[in-house]
Amino acid sequence: MRPPKADVVACGPEASGTRALMVNTERLCAPYDISVRHLSLPLGDWWWGPEDIAGEKTVIITRRPDYQSIACWKQGCARSAEEAAGEWPRAIATLASIPDAHWVLYEAMMADAVTQFRGICAFLGIDFDERLLQRDDQWWPWRDENRKYYQ
Image (cartoon, rainbow, N blue to C red; front, side, top):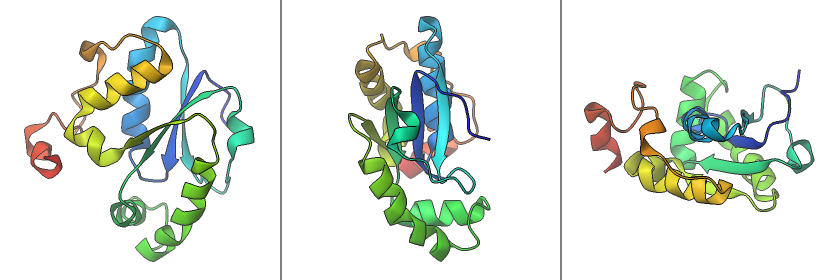
């Protein structure tokens, strides 16, 4: 089953930080009644493309391919890191074909989330409110034990 359309789609290759992107983009958009959906690529067996998200503002997150491949394998979305790495070129080519998208690098988001989400808000035409960012998830960069990995 394909997810319903939204005003904004937060997407990227599987295991590239799309959930962190979606959760916080959704929180920033909530005061404006702007809907946000999450799509990883692929989504199960579905290799969606630009035609499937037409009319939605698109925010894409990527991360270093080596880390993405390992994360994808560890999260169970690929049988091996090599299999995940083999899907990377197709995912990036598909994402690159989306016109007028805003791109975010996962490592940059982890190192300076405030700056990255300010850019996302500017792209979406909404005000940035740092108080709306979710800071309590175990993988989020504000947690002291995670911060050392992204500085």
